[in-house]
Amino acid sequence: MHILLISIIYVAFISLGLGDSLFGSAWPVIQRELNVPIHYAGIVSMIMAGGTILAGLMSDRITRKFGVRVVVPISVFITAAALLGFSTANTFWMLCLWAIPYGLGGGTLDAAINNYVATHYTSRHMSWLHCFWGVGAMTGPYIMGLHLTGGIEWSGAYRTIAIMQIIFAVILAFSFPLWKRRETVNGDTLPVKGLGEILQIRGVKFALLAFFSYCAIEATTGLWASTFLVNHRGIEAETAALFASFFFIGITAGRFVSGFIANKLGSKTMIKIGIVIIFIGIGAIFIPLDVDLFSFAGLIIIGLGCAPIFPALIHSTPSNFGAENSQGIIGVQMAGAYTGSALMPPLFGLLTNTVGLGFYPVFLLAFAGLLAAMFKLLYNVQQQSN
Image 1: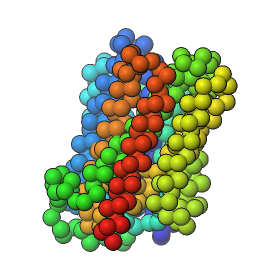
Image 2 (image 1 turned 180 degrees about the vertical axis):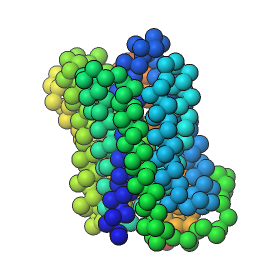
Image 3 (image 1 turned 45 degrees about the horizontal axis):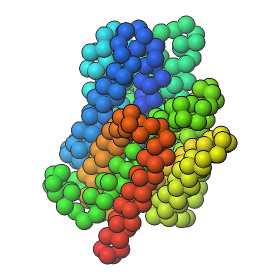
Image 4 (image 1 turned 180 degrees about the horizontal axis):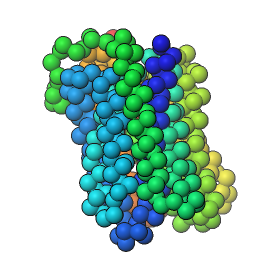
């Protein structure tokens, strides 16, 4: 039963990744079809992020009231409905409308499953959980590409993945008894803490900023890698796109490998190793030589460094703050993470207007430094508490 349930949980995270990566791969076609400015993609993305942030802040209350075994399949059904809605969109405002339930459903699912795995499973499974999100994130654009090259409209890909989501949701619904047997009731009878109370818990603010800075690194690296390579390094667009994708492959492969060593090394060591590797990767991009290999390698190394950090930070939450507080704190951490993902890449884009794309590694270095500092402060608080 243990293996069956964790396999079903992995499936849930594949479904989350499928939808998360779909809009970006479809936007060039959608933008031409709807005849809207290209930067309108940012509006839809911000609405999704807003829904996800709100869901993260509400996740403790929702999960305590209904239970994770109910929240998870319903959240997947909501995202499936939103994807079906996207497939019917023939105006921009309809995209914005369906972005709301997609963000809410995805955010609730993300926070609920992360907390469940953090409190019921080892760090190995947390690493593999996020590895499977990467599998879904890589598969979504592939499905979109198959539809487009096969002469099927982008809406067909959305319908295909929506149907897949519905199947996943049905599987999750039928797994209800498995979740019930494994679900802890430790915190269920305790009053729900408000945002102000959660932020007053020692170390939570440091954890929140750690998630914010980590996601700023991940999102900015992924979004601007190709542009940096083409416009600043003078690399061919096709080559740049290929090696920019290696950043995401580095994250996914790194999380798969991390699963084999996470239990032995522990979350704190995995985070330290990841931060050091990120600094090495950024250093490689900094090297001012006309050798493209350094930039390519730097992106892959940053991806490998990012791989263990997010899962390890999540998994350490119950031990850092107590299982009775973990759902509320993880929800707040998810909100901080998505805020970093939503706001920092556009901020870098604005900065390039004045400082240029050469600022790319400096920007990443600043947030890597902030991540290292926040982790150190969080670690000091936990040492003092113990």
